[in-house]
Amino acid sequence: MTVHNIQSFQDYKDTLSAHPNVLIDFYATWCGPCKVIAPLLVQCGPYPSTSTHSNEDKFKDIYFAKVDIEEVPDLATELGIRAMPTLVLFKNGEKLEETVGPNPTTLPSFIQKAL
Image (tube, rainbow, N blue to C red; front, top):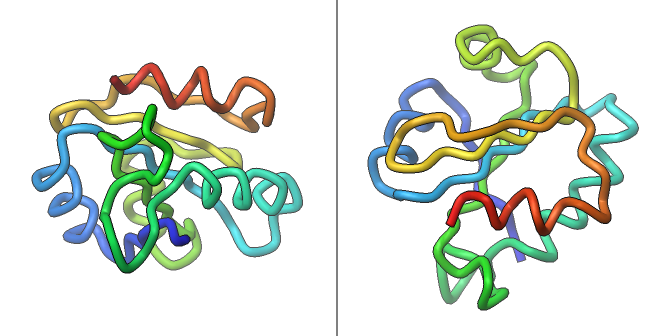
């Protein structure tokens, strides 16, 4: 299973245009808490060969993506990302909600808010 990589500001815009419900994980490779959350997002996220959306039925309408803030710093700056991990939900291209340093036990209920 994979979570899709956003590698540019244009990728970000294209993702929001193409998918009505999007969860983006803003992370850094050196961030310890990011390494805790990443496997949980993969667990909720899509199978790479069969779908662009989640394999879990309850999250099937959410597109999962991630952004390395050091590779796309302009996007992190534009969205005001100051701590990692930061998860941001988008609905119809608009920012719906965000959480910083999400608790693994509350992650499913946070993701559910996008629906």
